[in-house]
Length: 344
Length: 143
Image 1 (cartoon, chains in turn brown, blue):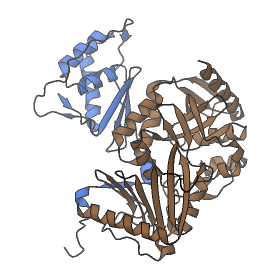
Image 2 (cartoon, each protein chain N blue to C red):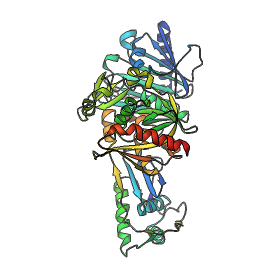
Image 3 (cartoon, rainbow over the protein chains, first blue to last red):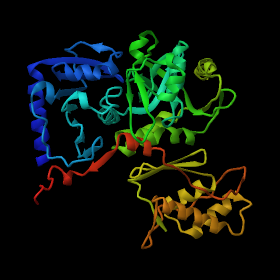
Image 4 (tube, chains in turn purple, red):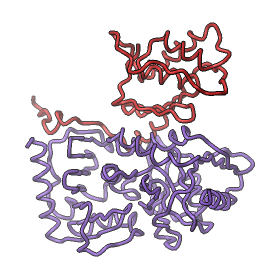
């Protein structure tokens, strides 16, 4: 056993001991898999809870496919683990990709995620939740879930999704393409809402699953349509546009759709034209819209994620959604498209 | 002859357009029509003469000076870090196949369309790779 493996093995053991002292257990069905979170006290579970609160809760004695043990130094009094990791600049992360272990970490604020692929066990450890990166609350454990679902043959896609009783439309594109606005407009119009930024997709069954109940909107867009989402916080970065985030799945639980069969793939693009239009796009443009940003969310397993992205898109002839004036027409357009694709 | 490290650069041709993703930089690219044909031929390890044979047999109205356009496109591929010139001759993995399309496609000078918008993603949640060899053996401050 290498020094790294020995250190991680000891950390898993110590983390389980800490969690056993005041265990708070939450088992959820996420992406069709049973994932158990075992928290040392309530702090970490309370932190990740809002983003996952809409997902089906399972009995505590239900066998789990993945177990995530989580604790923070501030609550437990346990010193933050010293794994002699190289320093990285504040708010940047380091990544260890060993054969069976994946580890990502921040130096400042101190946060660590470990996945042992051999035993489907993970750790999520913080110094204090008060200082965690601002994007961690609306979409917690993103890298960890991306790594693990990839190993299960499912894609944690950088995509939004909305649905009717017939099926779902997958909304793909880079940041700023209009995924969030489109999904929230559709939700407000009564369509089912699966997610704004990340969803799980099983390419074998073409099923899309809800993941996070959060949504993020560039502050300017949010200010234009404040009724779409109540703001719970703002993600600020010196070099990027501010984004407001909220938890529409908590705010509008009756609009949440937990899973659906994908019927259509949509590439939104903000055109600022006189109207909103749907037109055929191409398979290559869809792959360009989905694969790169999905690949670089998890930062490892690049080839596997690229392959899963191809598999997810293969059955579909994608559409381009030009977002101009009159976005209130979009829900009806997508409802009709889903119905038409569902018949074909 | 050009070498493409397919551990770090992956591509797929769909509807006559190549989608190329560079895992090391986060940049991604599109190459349509003639450009996709040239890219696939490069991947297969073909020389410029073989690449031009395929281009001329697959497209109509190919100009006399098409080779200079193709070489310029290949330069853009190399400049983007997607391929490098092989030092020694390497046997091609397969020879160029002639396109069997019934409708001839007119020549359009090949262009590499490059995207760097994931720099935003890197900014907001950057990750620095650490190899297993570099961890946990961090040099001490006084070493």
